[in-house]
Amino acid sequence: MIILSAAQTRELDQATIDEQHLPSAALMERAATAFTRWFFGRLTQEEAGEILVLCGPGNNGGDGLAIAHLLHQGNYAVRVGLLPAGKYSADWQHNRRHLPTAVPVVEITEGQLPDILPGTAVIDALFGTGLTRPLTGLAVTLVAHLAQAKARVIAVDIPSGLFADAPQPLGSAVVRAQHTVSFGLPKLAFLLPQNADFVGEWHLEDIGLSTRFIEGAATYWHYTDAAAVAQTLPARPKFSHKGTFGHALLLAGSRGKMGAALLAAGACLRSGVGLLTAQIPSLGYGIFQISQPEAMCLPDPQTDFISELPDLKPYQAVGIGPGLSQNAASLAVFQQLLKEAVASKTRPKGLPLIIDADALNLLGQHRELLPLLPENTVLTPHPKEFERLTEPARDDYHRLELLRDFARTHRCLVVLKGAYTCLATPTGDLHFNSTGNPGMATGGSGDVLTGVLLALRAHAQLPAFEAVRLGVYAHGLAGDLAAAETGQAGLVAGDLVRHIGPALATLTARPAF
Ligand SMILES: NC(=O)C1=CN([C@@H]2O[C@H](COP(=O)(O)OP(=O)(O)OC[C@H]3O[C@@H](n4cnc5c(N)ncnc54)[C@H](OP(=O)(O)O)[C@@H]3O)[C@@H](O)[C@H]2O)[C@@H](O)CC1
Ligand SMILES: [K+]
Image (cartoon, rainbow, N blue to C red; front, side, top):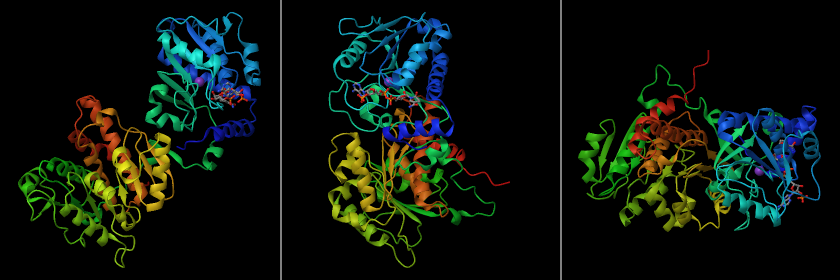
């Protein structure tokens, strides 16, 4: 799925109207019908009580009027509050004329704000994607009134006052919704932590927007849903052998952090790698061999950390970082790895690398190493690690700019971890992930991701970008499958390892018939 700017969303609406020869009020009717379908499925007449629909002067307000009409037809008790303005959109006027007189309508003024009892279901249709500036005057008073009333707020398309694709000035008034029911495509604003309190839980409703326009639209924002990754993992041919799926090398672990190495190794093995070798400090040799009998183990001469890089010839991908520690010896190993991973005659694209955790911190301290990264190297920072590689971000939108610039400049794949993990590519595209849950905010989740990505990058048939997008999605899906069993609070990283196989199974190609 793609994500469009507010301006492109307007073009999409227009393209749909033109292509399908629709009166524009008919598209609005579709939006209102989709919204009420969602609403009917969520709240009965008794649960909803008397609903208040707040309508602004544009098409978002027009949606609100059409929604009020449909709720009334559905025997819900509904009243409308209108935000007065100098001009109203044509479709707003159409829906205002057709609103049954049995629906009470009040024009809101500073002196006459609507009564809202705690728990009242309020539908926010004040402003949508046509917002051109922060709210002022009466709209600000109304937003504050709504917040104070402790209402249950459901936003139509987007919470009023929130820009769909850009930050609003600090302190701007924005409606805080518990639910946002949006049309067609997700909005960038929904995916950023700074907007979470405004957007609440968001839901997408299909209103039959022009697929031709969507397919041709130029955007670098993407949303990885199930359709984007379906059948990405090649099916295993009957006559395959362990060499078919690659031999991966993992450099991980130090005293007190052997768990990170074990989690990454377990995840790599469960993600279909042919062979896995792990270079680990020798103190972990026994526990590693017992816990991961399927992996081969190279004990480092050092007891507590890694100090040597093995011969890289046998390997199709290398993962470095989980639990590594940041001492001089690990830095030397990391530098050596980067020098040897560069493109050569035998490996024209360079050696696929996954760089995580302490290896990212080493990279942040030694940015002179950045030009050595082979093309399509995978970096998996969380926001703090990313900041160490670049600079502190002013806000979430600025962080996305930094992310995009970084991936383009260094021609690498950067996985910025968090809710809606964002994968930035060398071409400047940003892919937000749709799977995962807050239960995964627990120690070791990142180590598991490194293991998954290591296996998929070692796979000969998966191109770099497809491998990483698939791995990020499958990792989140494993988290969702695990949380269904353990609950979010009870989820630990080891549960992700147990569920990564079933997650990948749902994303495997079915043989053509
Ligand atoms: N197009 C379609 O067919 C479909 C559209 N759909 C729906 O329409 C929504 C988009 O509608 P929209 O473009 O009319 O924008 P919307 O946000 O309602 O209001 C803009 C108005 O507000 C004004 N204004 C702006 N900022 C302001 C501010 N801070 N303070 C005060 N005023 C401000 C602005 O006037 P301005 O002063 O900027 O000229 C303009 O008059 C979309 O979110 C979805 O819900 C669906 O029904 C599907 C079909
Ligand atoms: K709204």
